[in-house]
Length: 457
Ligand code: PHE
Ligand code: NA
Image (cartoon, protein in one colour):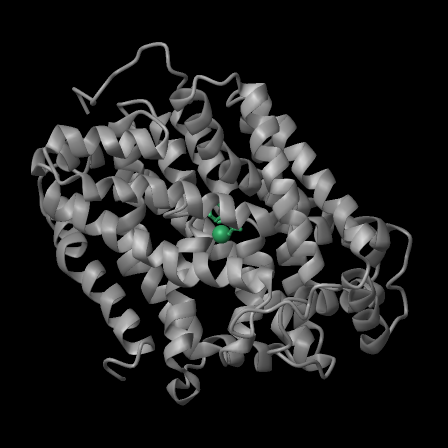
């Protein structure tokens, strides 16, 4: 990838390819896999939704991730200025700069609620450690979750802890320990999930869970289901929100984007499916409702931890690992804004962190309130939390993905992406280009038109 727009030799880069892979996997694997994937799968009827989601990962998520990393590396800046530089280089219409601006906005909006949900994971570690789940039934554990949501002070404290840690890590910059911590975290998380899958096998309802996850019954799919599955493919891979683009901007020129992307997507998908396999058998074994919403894992897993041998220890470890996985995603959500503030406005890193952190904290208070005292403050029936989630996952991210696909497939000079992606000029590259030009945009547009009622399937 020679001749990046502005190669600034002093800008930081990942020390190795592996450092980038770890950071990108750290960004991808998070609450999206373990908290969000199971509960939206439950809400949208299971198998058919999972199939659509996997299809979106394959024909939209993976090619868009390649494009986004390439755009980041080629731009060698924060999303807004990096995209602006590419637009200038290509002599394209200034409209396309919107890709970078939308990405920054989207990442910021996601982080506003991400810190609150990550706070739930933090709050559950000490609960598990003190044996709160031991011998409790589903009703009692459901009431515990409800009690936590009803407590604005506790939610605010945990949100503040998460935000503070995120700011502290981002403040230290790329090489400040981030690379190493993910090295331990990912295998640990996967092993614990597999232990939970093993426990789910003993629940007597394992096959029921498996068929809920993998038996596709398309009569249960709605237009909204398609949109949610599409949006989640973006969310879970950290796309169209500045995170992967910014991490790509620190990627050394000689790393193959194609192969690296496959690795990240496979890891992310494995963790999500493992979480599904661990949770749904327990949902059925305990007579819970698959569509019970955002509390699903916080009700299901504690029942298991309360019954299994060494459950308190496993539970503590699990929620701690989930919290750390959420932190490594939160870091990637904050970094784009920080790089924008420092590059564009020449702020120091600490000033940028304090400014962004203050705004995020205020936004976080709004999200906390929307779970209790402000649950009646709604717009189109959606609370502030719901609105942030809905606008980002269902609209901003797929729209950003659509724009990135058109921009990199049609607008940029062909050799630019060919250079960057590193798949050569043969069949793999041709396949990527064809997908980016036709399949990805068409698929996104069809899902949009379907949910808007213009067409219907
Ligand atoms: N991919 C993360 C997850 O699944 C969330 C995320 C979205 C992180 C967008 C960065 C950017 O939890
Ligand atoms: Na994910």
